Image 1 (cartoon, chains in turn purple, cyan):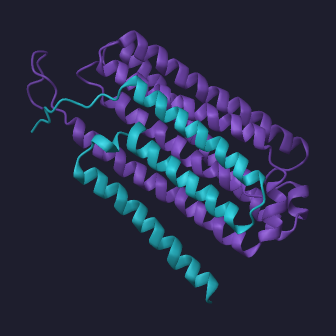
Image 2 (spheres, one colour):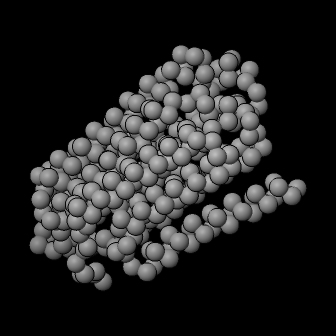
Length: 205
Length: 95
C-alpha cells in the first residue's frame, strides 16, 4: 500500500469481495428466515385468524410487484453481462431500468399501505389493537416484513445508482466490476426474499 | 494472489429464459392457491417458491459457475435454516 503511483494498480481481490458479499447475504437470509419462522409458528397457532387476515391483502398489487421485481432481477443480471462484454452503454440503460423497477415497486407499496392506513390499519392504531390476537400478529408481521423488505429495496436502489455513476465515470469498467457484481447479488437477494414473502403473506389464505 | 480465470458471462438469452420460467411459476402459484386444496396449497406454494429460489440462486446469482467453496457455504446456510425450523416446530408440536 506504500507506493501509490498511478502506474501501479491498487491491490484488490475481487473474489474476496464477492465472498464477503455472500457472507453478508447469509446474515440477511437468516434475518428474514427468523421472521419467516415467527410467521410459521403463529400461523400454526392461529390458522383461522391468519386465513381471514390474509384475505384483506390485495393479491393483484402483490402479483404486479412480483413481476416488477423478477424483471428488475433479470435486467441487473443483463447489465453485468453487458459490462463484461464491454457494452457500457447497454449496461447503463439496463441499470436505469432496474432502478426504475425498484421505484415502481415502492410506488405500488405506497398505494398498498396507503389503503390500509386510510382504513385505520397501521401499527399502533386503535383499530389494530382491537383486532383478535391472531389477526394482530398477522398484520404486525405483514407491516414489519414488507417494511423491512421495502427498506432493502431503497438500499438496493442507492447501491445500483452508485454503480451507475461509477460506470459513468469509468471507475467501474470491464476490468473492475466488483461493485456492480456485488450490487447485483444484493438486488437478487431482495428478489429472493420477495419470492417467499409473496406466497406466504398474499396467497396462502 | 490473483484470480485470472476469465469470468463466466451469462448470455442474455439464458437470462431471458430464466425470467420467463420464473414468471410462469409465479402465475402457477397464483392459480394453484386460488383453488382450495387445504394443507396441500401451502405445500405446493412453498415448493414452487423453493424452485424459484433455486433458479434465482443458480442462474441470476451465478452459483452455477462459482467454485465449490461458495456452493458448499450456500447449501450449508440453507441446511442450517432447515434444522432450525424443524427443531423449533418439534418444540411447539410436542411441548
